[in-house]
Image (cartoon, rainbow, N blue to C red; front, top):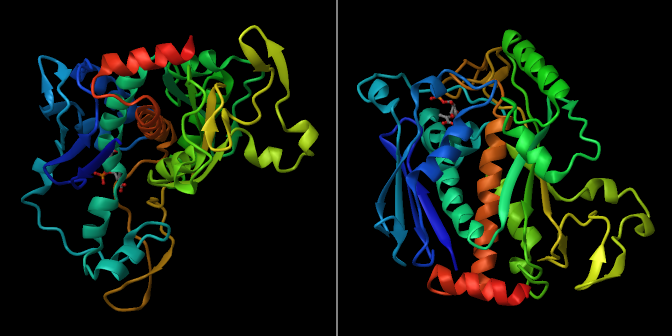
Length: 371
Ligand code: EPS
């Protein structure tokens, strides 16, 4: 239904994306995309590169008069840092960072300069994901589906959120520079990031993406590759450094008996209602009308100031990693990226169920289904 492809390296001239399958008539303002690009660039714990970049999208095709016309949408985000690198002579990198794409990337492609692997493996590419996801969010917004996110943990420091509503979690995260709705935990997370920076280390964490306003029946149980939970997991694990994904409190559920896990149904005015959401909004690979909860674990970034043992591929001998400029913690940024990827999968599933060639038809079909 929907598909996109990105190209571009971290220190090349730009990132580009082509998005196919958006309906005609969708209002797109580049400011809406830039807002998410700015959110992704921010966050406590990022490195010097973010001071250089001012990510902003150029829409090069697929829009006319501020609306989609059913044609592929082409997006470009310039890399300002390109100018600093284009003439620079850089000796080949030969010391792979454990945990990074460096070593398996060179084994796969036979590139003798690890930098050539790192250029495309870089999380810089996630700026393109966010721009594409912003288009998906605009489509979802036309049928009142909202996608937001928050950071639940950084470096083992957990937010205490009690019964704070999902809307409040997402809204408060927007006010925190670590995207965490709990102000006390935010402060502790900042201090942990400071300690990691001082110690030449890096930190990972846990993020949660929340989608509300979803109709039931997006995705299907009928085919393994069209189950919504599987598609969400793939999309979120396609983000650099994301190593685990769960829908709802899946790992916690695995420790409990079924009677404490299933969300009981009760009669309501418009059909059965649930009072709990331990399924995280997905049953049988389909949305069930409850808020969707996607939780993801990000490992600590493999680029660290303090060296760790590695092998110099030029000599085969033992050596230590060399520092490359990087972020100490990119968990808040990853929450924006995960939001974009979840929005993408939901927009795709929406098109599958209600698809039409123009935005007004989709809106009408969703409205008819809801009434
Ligand atoms: C990254 C290394 C750093 C990060 C970069 C991801 O870039 P540089 O090597 O230019 O200092 O800042 O992330 C971004 C540029 C970005 O926009 O998120 C890496 O090696 O993955």
